[in-house]
Image (cartoon, rainbow, N blue to C red; front, side, top):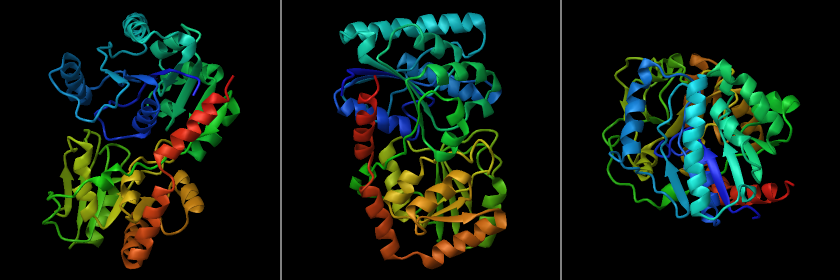
Length: 383
């Protein structure tokens, strides 16, 4: 690869459940590139519900809280103490100067020139844009998994500049690509791969051991993306079964109060997911079918499918496109809450060892290792 390093502005922290950005940056680091992974600097002003997250950032930046996800060789994690007011002029100036100091130190320490560096961003905020335009970087990459304007409309003008300046804009979903393509300089669909490292973990005991089946497992952020009526319909349709939601929960998540819906905290280590997945009968994606969630390629498909689980999901535009490509054995769709429960019954009735093996085989043929090799070839062709 013709680049020697990556400066990555992530939209999630390194300790978060593994996402696309984790796998891509790990893959590039494994290929010898020096990586500066800058944790989320924020796309909107903080709310009261964000206080715990801000407190955690303070503790992480000070070294009080240790990073638990394994950090690959060649990677450096920056937990920035940025002022969480991304559209205030004074904060933008301060944050850009503060971050540039760390970037300059990274370049100097590794004897790098900007032209040898991939400037990779999942954010299009004013401070990031200012830094993107501050140097003649080797390649400016904007990586999109959802429409940030649905989270914060003020990002719109800055994103428009990124779209016109980026050497390449990567889209995690076909739906997002179709939405953005007319206004994007160099749009490319870059699909997610699969990470199978959890299969090397010997599943020990876990909190699902004593829960009755069938066991429907959700892994990921428990937040406004979740359609509560989907969960309620599933819970009432399987009164003898269990619905397990595991991940960081925000105050805007309205989860039904049913005795067979269990909310578990996020695991401290990625490897701890293995026993839960090994004991699950199906993975679920009960997302709202709106403009925000409907374009997403959910990262949790990785964990569900490497274990061969059938996936019961809301019929979002992007997931329907994936089902057309992958085939019928992967996803069981519900259009509405009642249909979601019917899809779960179909998934349970049709699941068998042959279908589980087919799902597992598919993931082994489409790993992140293959995807990052393809990414390297794509980036090398950019002038």
